[in-house]
Length: 302
Image 1 (cartoon, rainbow, N blue to C red):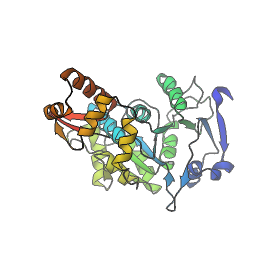
Image 2 (image 1 turned 90 degrees about the horizontal axis):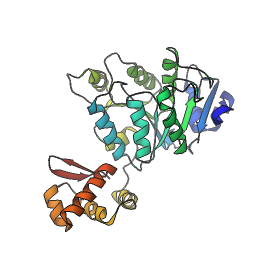
Image 3 (image 1 turned 120 degrees about the vertical axis):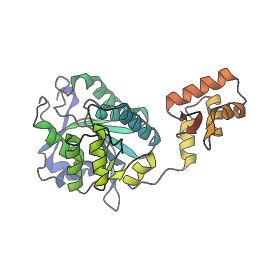
Image 4 (image 1 turned 135 degrees about the vertical axis):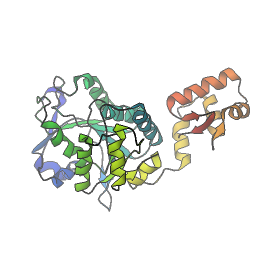
């Protein structure tokens, strides 16, 4: 089939833990089309998947706050046993996929269209869809490969986003956002819901604040996401080993000094590096997402 698109029929769903979840739906898809690599997934004694599937949804018209929260969460989840699932759309969806790849997390995209390159929605994200595949990710759709997007497709697609997840995380959503429909569908399927709290005056936070008021988990850091997914935090030593392999000697020095938050000036003195060498290594670590400076104080993120 064109673009290396494969098919799994309804009769085959039960043979794979990921697709077996589709059998929970009231309207079970007759078939699923896919491109890419189906992840190796097992089921624990509680019926949870390993790796866990975290569906991330949110507003297409996101704010800098929403983007910053999502980027930080993905940095803090780096190396965890999690797959990020989203819808490839503009806004929070595409940021979720990009941040997943950036932080070495597998990602699955479920666009509101067929999977042939000429119809994937949105067309602006076709090249990134191929990047997902190149990073051992997966594209999924219940639609014929040549189906173009239309209004009825997205509510139907959203039920699959909800069903395949272990939990749904809402980054930003208006009071009457379609994102909330996905959250409600997930709740009906027995999935846990998390939401990012936001400013009470922000229209893009009204939906998330409402979800929290109704009982959703308030998510403010990576550890909150692990709690949402019923995962234990990896030992710091494991994360250090993973991160240090990618760092220069000067970056090693800075990271090892950051067992706790320190002032930037104190960090420079303790490093015994020249100002030029320190600033170069410091900037590189910030770009990689390993450290964060706030009001002159520096903390390690991994």
